[in-house]
Image (cartoon, rainbow, N blue to C red):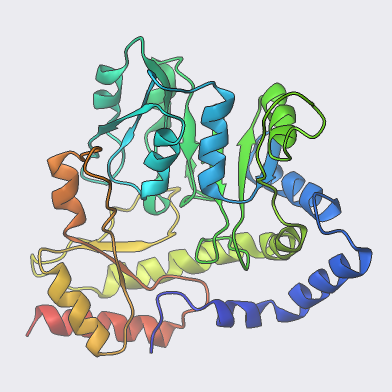
Length: 348
């Protein structure tokens, strides 16, 4: 079986260092908001290129707490895209605000012109989504509005645009360290990057029940110290992970034969490959065919409740997208096998 993601193989790749890091954390008794978390926050901020990073329990909470800090509530609007995992919109909904969903362009990235046309007096924030490792045109967005921008960079750690990394363009950058992400821990984990000192300081209090600010209601959203110790090991190899994913993407680019039935991701200098996503009108049939040949794929269907309808163009796009195995532990032989079966399907 060629798995979409294999956490055990990735653990084996860094087993010695991870085991030592976990043991060290346990022997110190540092379990909640201690040395490992502080070290990871420093490492992440340095990698992304921001002054601060704050570890949280998930990428979902990173989005939610960013909105809460801004005071987003009922009667407000937040602009984002329909083509995203539902956690993006969930964070807006759980603040009581109205999600305003815009279309994406051919490359799957937010249509900035449509965003600018939707801004009004109710707009409290904009959440561009750097989906699949590519980036929204942040220069066009940041040049044209002073509305706070919260980057959903949960799928784009390491992606760059004009020399700046995802998570460093907006007021806040939100990241997930769910196991299948580019930089994944062995449970849930997330973080926010920012250059806003006031926000970073309050966020550290907010994630911990406002323990040091009695009289305010906070949240329990702490990055677990053991997970931080794992991330501190893996972040040392992040560039290698990104390079390996790029190698796999190039293998797919070179090997897949479209014959007019298949579209591959558009290459852009600076993008990374959280996922390698192909587009075909025969998506469902191809997925079944690959499964029968022991190749695991994932569809890109993101379902929202009926009271939050997506643009029709987004729905049509998602019906055609399929995520192929693309991670730092898959072998060249396995990639060639995926390519062989996809080409067989479209030349049958």
